[in-house]
Image 1 (cartoon, protein in one colour):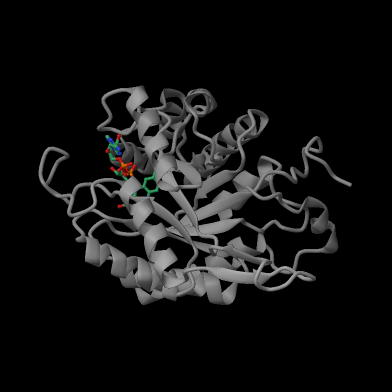
Image 2 (tube, rainbow, N blue to C red; image 1 turned 120 degrees about the vertical axis):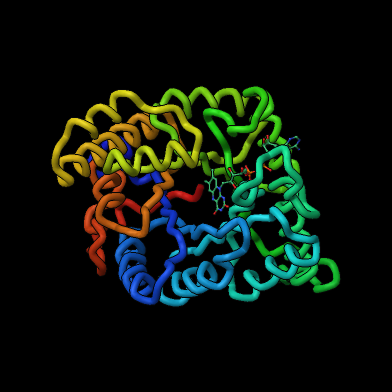
Length: 335
Ligand code: FAD
């Protein structure tokens, strides 16, 4: 049986993908085929981003419905709360729950274009933690309890009452949220999200394994207990690198930037991006990361190549449907 020591098969490493809602019908059709291929690789979940202004409400939901209906993979909905009233946020959550979504990434969202953190833009909910609480509350009101009789005991005494499980992830920032005043504030924010009921975190992208590993150590020392998945973004062109640094506020990774700039071909740049991300993934796995979350940019080739090279794809699960029986040797553990 293959084990984690076998570099060709790391059975304990769950992975997940992030997609964004398509803007055209043609892009939606192409995305369905991407989802089919990503699903065949055996991810733990596929998450779908959400426009902070609510602009992608329908298109995000359409993608989540497709994942739920056409694959066996758990769809995870990103939800944001900037600019929403309490009633609007509750109705949004209800709509996603009604569509069968049971996994969420609860986010505050960025200020709308033209506004800064110092402007008034928040709405009734002021932080992701408040959105986590609201998701739990709406879910509890919708399905109060599930009652399961315990065999062999009288029903009055032996009924297990439990809430239907919802997975609520939150964002974490190994190199600090751009508006954070200190590294301690980032950890305090994560603790507040845990207290609100979050049970998973996914990080902002970063380029050095040490940044993630030291963040995890600080978070654990402070009492953060839930798994924190590292977010990995394969950067396959200088233009993409510039764009993501602009959006994330991360520092320029000098070595990767120079390699991408001096490489003249698109194919060569793609190879650099894959190698870099695969090397990062390997260091994270070696450092004890509980899984890998890959930003897929709505394409399967690059992220599957990263996982394959990092030894995280089970044999027969290289993105082609109908995995062979051998892949059962690499079944993933729960997060
Ligand atoms: P919060 O955790 O609410 O934090 C926002 C700020 O408030 C931080 O400075 C924090 O330190 C501070 N803060 C929070 N709680 C407290 C507290 N209790 N006391 C004091 N200060 C506090 N954006 C989108 O619009 N759509 C997406 O789909 C999306 N997906 C993302 C996926 C990932 C993995 C990540 C990492 C980010 C994503 N974002 C997305 C971006 C995100 O919305 C922004 O980074 C946003 O600025 C912060 O969101 P948050 O959920 O971390 O907010």
